[in-house]
Image 1 (spheres, rainbow, N blue to C red):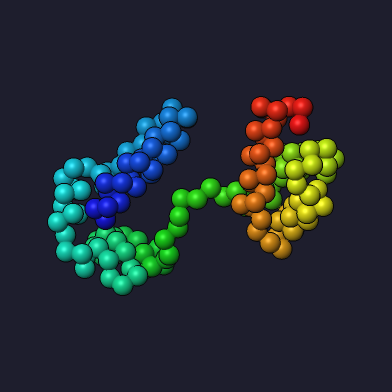
Image 2 (cartoon, rainbow, N blue to C red):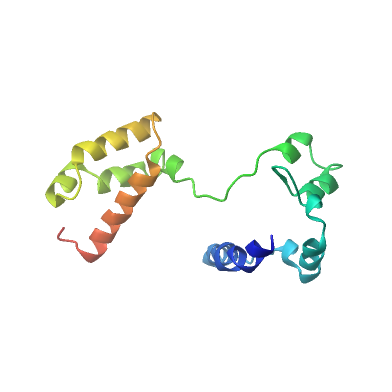
Length: 150
């Protein structure tokens, strides 16, 4: 916890939170980062924080009277961006535009047939190619901006 507090929290999470909220003129609060709360948490017996694979032990115990058991027991969810679902829905037209076969053939950087297969499998839900497709989309956007003749 102390390592996360001194590294990952300030350099990663809080920076991202600050940028995301500033974008929409919103100010986020982090009540668990109040200095008194933080000092209290750092002094706690580790067994009150983690037991085996269960984290936030004391917090979950404190919340028991108000939260349903299924909420307290559910697995932790990451704060990842749902690119896979975006590429199957709202971003699909843009992905198809940027990764159009004729465009890819003209550039000669990647196989239009292979990328078409990735797009089809991803859109059909047969595979998750979000990471690779996103990389190609970002490359295409970069090329649009910095090498429009490509």
